[in-house]
Amino acid sequence: MKFFVATALFATAAIAGPVEVRTGTAPLCPNGLYSNPQCCDTLVLGIVGLGCEVPTQTPRDGVDFKNICAKTGDQAACCVLPVVGQDLLCQTPVGIQG
Image (cartoon, helix red, strand yellow):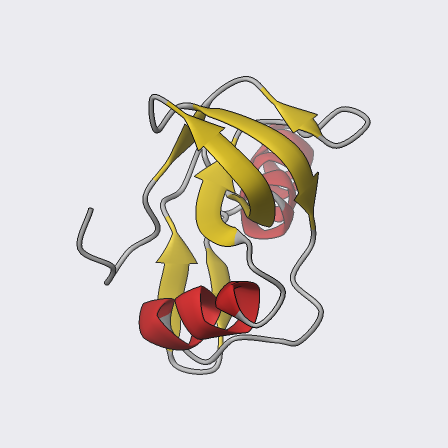
């Protein structure tokens, strides 16, 4: 019985290991809540994203992420759960100066 429990715990830990949004070789967004890379039309006070969408290309790093979003006039952001193009909590992606 102990073996079964230990195996189940190990399998669960292996499957649900740390989540980090990575594209290419560098992380774009931090682990946890702000793990959704988005291109937003507007960032109000740097924390509320309006008109947000997933980037049209896969960014290699933070600077590439910023450039991909800038092609359409958007701003790169790492946001909490996006809902119908609105993100209530966003922050600057890794590797991009505020």
